[in-house]
Length: 367
Figure 1 (tube, rainbow, N blue to C red):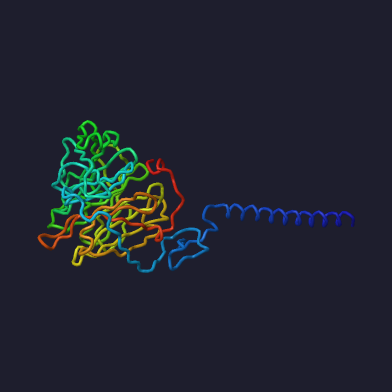
Figure 2 (figure 1 turned 45 degrees about the vertical axis):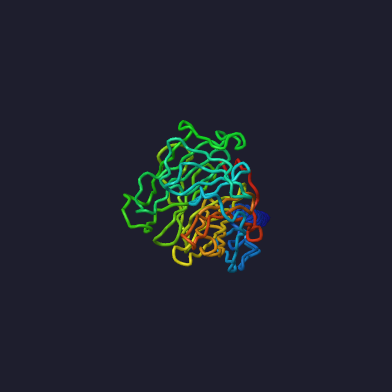
């Protein structure tokens, strides 16, 4: 009898201990599950400026929606120097504003006075050719000039980017005209990954035109000017060194306008695109891209602004930041005779239109 009592007691104790151990294991299991990244995170719109902001969302799923916003950048210089009739790109670098002319112009970049129509300096690239220069970018040490305009027939096979160090340029007060020797200029040649053998088309009828570029984290990012579908494809060249490359297609954004320029805020994950509709009255738009992830600029917030049309803005083809949320926009000369919209310099400020993310160092941008 005593033996049976002991046996029952031991069995009960074993069951109790097993039950306790199971509970312990369950706590461990659920603790591990909760420790998995993203387990208890909630997807949604994380931007307080959006109409569908979700205060409980911890992961931005790119769903943010915004009220229609009309924005008119103010004029700073009412007529930029006539040398830049075809002004086609803007870039702030070491507190100076720089620009280039469109195809057929001199193979040079120009330092612009932001308070007058004076040109402070002309920097000529030795042995370079301006076939169709469309963008100028800067990574903190080097300038990048995009000779990749391709709207003529969409079949260029000589797409390239010129790269040279800013420290080759002396102060403009000591030398107003400078030549960068060919030995200091690198050439980055490329072709688009999804174009295949370029097919000749008529004017302004290609998906493979390009006028927008930024440098970010040691890579070159291009945004197509798609004349066929009015969207833009984000291409990436995974290096900034001289050589021959394939620009990989990463993502596409439906813009409903032709993208003509791009810029990235210094130290912030904010990118702006600008462009126009290729039909009268030439409506202009700007996209503010923010809170994106994994190098995919189109998976975060995509706020579109309505800008003035071509009758007021001409044809906007340049944009750059001068600080976290403000910068400059330029347009090339449009029209002829008495019906001319002159090349102008405007300023923009989007501080009230974007939620500014945490600031990173410029060095992080360059890597």
